[in-house]
Length: 100
Length: 203
Image 1 (tube, rainbow over the protein chains, first blue to last red):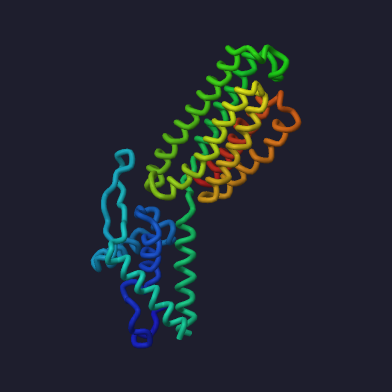
Image 2 (spheres, rainbow over the protein chains, first blue to last red; image 1 turned 120 degrees about the horizontal axis):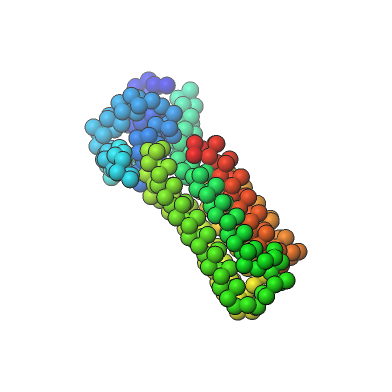
């Protein structure tokens, strides 16, 4: 999966990972998704999603909040403006590489 | 090689977004309850008319017409309430948000067809052709559900099309037995749909 670092140097390494790419794709298409929903859509585990979610949060690309559905607390993820821009830039880079 | 990997990534983005664009929080239990309410409405209608044939009894009796409309309005309101409550309950259980852009699309796709049904009902009452009211509702509810289904799972689209196709009979062949077809579609079809959804989508 991981390509040679120097072969495509301009790709954003934070986004260029399968689970993180999945999270960014879904959150760029929806206003919000819960932890459980992301886990099921990406067919991954609690641990895996937590780790990759944290990396994206630390980069300021997404943020998480507690929401309440009928008084039950749920972790909800949103994309930030910075994250949206980073994801769009990433897509532009992908297009450039394909065109080469 | 690198190019292939990029293409794989693009396909993955597309696939993930596509699967996240389906509304899957459908409540089978609400479908079964709606069906049961429609069957009750069907038998109450029969008890008022003392016949399945709306043209046989005192069809021009204004009181009967008002009673029939009240019964089916109550069925609609109770079924709608069951739908809302059970959808929120299911969202809570499945740990998802009940009110999102996707759920709004599912609801608003249904609205134009329901408004058209209400307008045509008034038109048919005005023209004294009340026997066509059930067929109109079966058709337009089907249209609304088929439209909603574009944002949701296949069971919803199948339900919508089953209504649309069935509507042909009460509209063109047996309008005077419309209430029986209300029972078949809003009753039996909803119950079958509800069971399928409950089994396939965990409730």
